[in-house]
Length: 134
Image 1 (cartoon, rainbow, N blue to C red):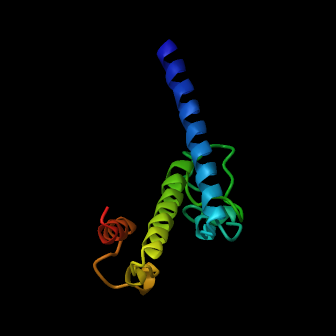
Image 2 (image 1 turned 180 degrees about the horizontal axis):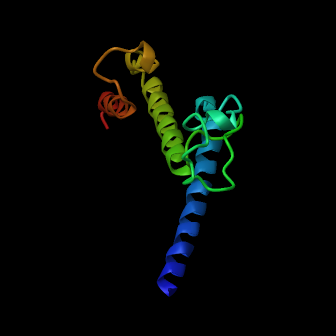
Image 3 (image 1 turned 45 degrees about the horizontal axis):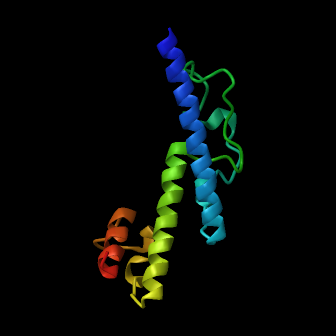
Protein backbone atom coordinates (compact mmCIF):
# COMPACT_ATOMS: atom_id res chain seq x y z
CA UNK A 1 0.00 0.00 0.00
CA UNK A 2 2.81 2.40 0.85
CA UNK A 3 4.46 1.58 -2.46
CA UNK A 4 1.33 2.69 -4.32
CA UNK A 5 1.42 6.02 -2.48
CA UNK A 6 5.06 6.52 -3.42
CA UNK A 7 4.31 5.69 -7.05
CA UNK A 8 1.38 8.11 -7.12
CA UNK A 9 3.53 10.84 -5.58
CA UNK A 10 6.29 10.24 -8.10
CA UNK A 11 3.76 10.44 -10.94
CA UNK A 12 2.49 13.79 -9.69
CA UNK A 13 6.02 15.15 -9.38
CA UNK A 14 6.92 13.84 -12.83
CA UNK A 15 3.81 15.41 -14.35
CA UNK A 16 4.61 18.76 -12.76
CA UNK A 17 8.18 18.58 -14.09
CA UNK A 18 6.92 17.87 -17.61
CA UNK A 19 4.45 20.75 -17.40
CA UNK A 20 7.21 23.10 -16.20
CA UNK A 21 9.51 22.03 -19.04
CA UNK A 22 6.64 22.45 -21.50
CA UNK A 23 5.97 25.98 -20.22
CA UNK A 24 9.67 26.82 -20.60
CA UNK A 25 9.81 25.42 -24.15
CA UNK A 26 6.63 27.26 -25.16
CA UNK A 27 8.08 30.51 -23.80
CA UNK A 28 11.27 29.92 -25.83
CA UNK A 29 9.25 29.17 -28.96
CA UNK A 30 7.21 32.34 -28.54
CA UNK A 31 10.39 34.35 -27.96
CA UNK A 32 11.79 32.97 -31.22
CA UNK A 33 8.57 33.57 -33.14
CA UNK A 34 7.87 29.88 -33.72
CA UNK A 35 4.27 29.17 -34.68
CA UNK A 36 2.59 26.66 -32.37
CA UNK A 37 -1.03 27.24 -33.41
CA UNK A 38 -1.38 23.83 -35.05
CA UNK A 39 -0.77 22.20 -31.65
CA UNK A 40 -4.05 23.61 -30.34
CA UNK A 41 -7.67 23.13 -31.34
CA UNK A 42 -8.93 25.98 -33.50
CA UNK A 43 -12.62 25.16 -32.97
CA UNK A 44 -14.85 23.92 -30.19
CA UNK A 45 -15.34 20.21 -30.83
CA UNK A 46 -18.99 19.23 -30.35
CA UNK A 47 -19.47 16.69 -27.56
CA UNK A 48 -21.39 14.31 -29.79
CA UNK A 49 -18.72 14.32 -32.50
CA UNK A 50 -15.71 13.34 -30.44
CA UNK A 51 -13.93 10.98 -30.28
CA UNK A 52 -16.06 8.38 -32.08
CA UNK A 53 -19.20 10.18 -33.18
CA UNK A 54 -21.38 9.58 -30.15
CA UNK A 55 -21.12 8.82 -26.49
CA UNK A 56 -22.31 5.23 -26.85
CA UNK A 57 -19.67 2.78 -25.75
CA UNK A 58 -17.62 5.49 -24.09
CA UNK A 59 -17.98 4.15 -20.58
CA UNK A 60 -14.18 4.13 -20.35
CA UNK A 61 -14.14 7.94 -20.51
CA UNK A 62 -13.94 9.68 -17.11
CA UNK A 63 -17.24 11.13 -15.93
CA UNK A 64 -15.82 14.66 -15.89
CA UNK A 65 -14.59 14.41 -19.51
CA UNK A 66 -15.46 17.34 -21.72
CA UNK A 67 -14.81 17.71 -25.45
CA UNK A 68 -11.90 19.97 -26.35
CA UNK A 69 -12.56 23.66 -26.78
CA UNK A 70 -10.82 26.19 -28.97
CA UNK A 71 -7.34 26.79 -27.57
CA UNK A 72 -7.05 23.42 -25.80
CA UNK A 73 -3.91 21.42 -26.53
CA UNK A 74 -4.29 18.69 -29.15
CA UNK A 75 -1.88 16.42 -27.29
CA UNK A 76 -1.06 15.40 -23.75
CA UNK A 77 1.79 17.35 -22.11
CA UNK A 78 4.44 14.72 -22.83
CA UNK A 79 3.81 14.72 -26.58
CA UNK A 80 3.35 18.50 -26.63
CA UNK A 81 6.75 18.84 -24.99
CA UNK A 82 8.33 16.68 -27.68
CA UNK A 83 6.70 18.68 -30.47
CA UNK A 84 7.72 22.05 -29.07
CA UNK A 85 11.26 20.87 -28.26
CA UNK A 86 11.66 19.62 -31.83
CA UNK A 87 10.61 22.99 -33.22
CA UNK A 88 12.99 24.82 -30.89
CA UNK A 89 15.87 22.53 -31.87
CA UNK A 90 15.11 22.97 -35.57
CA UNK A 91 15.02 26.73 -35.10
CA UNK A 92 18.38 26.72 -33.31
CA UNK A 93 20.00 24.56 -35.99
CA UNK A 94 18.54 26.70 -38.78
CA UNK A 95 19.87 29.80 -37.05
CA UNK A 96 23.35 28.26 -36.75
CA UNK A 97 23.29 27.34 -40.42
CA UNK A 98 22.22 30.85 -41.40
CA UNK A 99 24.95 32.43 -39.25
CA UNK A 100 27.57 30.26 -40.97
CA UNK A 101 26.17 30.88 -44.44
CA UNK A 102 25.04 27.29 -44.91
CA UNK A 103 22.03 26.93 -47.18
CA UNK A 104 19.25 24.75 -45.77
CA UNK A 105 16.37 26.14 -47.84
CA UNK A 106 16.10 22.81 -49.67
CA UNK A 107 15.08 21.04 -46.46
CA UNK A 108 13.30 23.93 -44.72
CA UNK A 109 9.97 23.58 -46.47
CA UNK A 110 6.64 22.31 -45.14
CA UNK A 111 6.27 18.55 -45.38
CA UNK A 112 3.19 18.79 -47.60
CA UNK A 113 5.30 20.62 -50.19
CA UNK A 114 8.33 18.35 -49.87
CA UNK A 115 9.34 15.26 -51.75
CA UNK A 116 12.75 13.98 -50.91
CA UNK A 117 15.07 12.14 -48.63
CA UNK A 118 14.60 14.38 -45.58
CA UNK A 119 10.96 13.63 -44.87
CA UNK A 120 11.08 13.74 -41.06
CA UNK A 121 12.27 16.36 -38.61
CA UNK A 122 14.88 13.96 -37.30
CA UNK A 123 16.34 13.45 -40.78
CA UNK A 124 16.35 17.19 -41.36
CA UNK A 125 18.11 17.81 -38.05
CA UNK A 126 20.74 15.20 -38.86
CA UNK A 127 21.32 16.78 -42.26
CA UNK A 128 21.66 20.26 -40.75
CA UNK A 129 24.15 18.90 -38.23
CA UNK A 130 26.05 17.18 -41.03
CA UNK A 131 26.22 20.43 -42.98
CA UNK A 132 27.37 22.25 -39.85
CA UNK A 133 30.00 19.59 -39.20
CA UNK A 134 28.65 18.69 -35.77
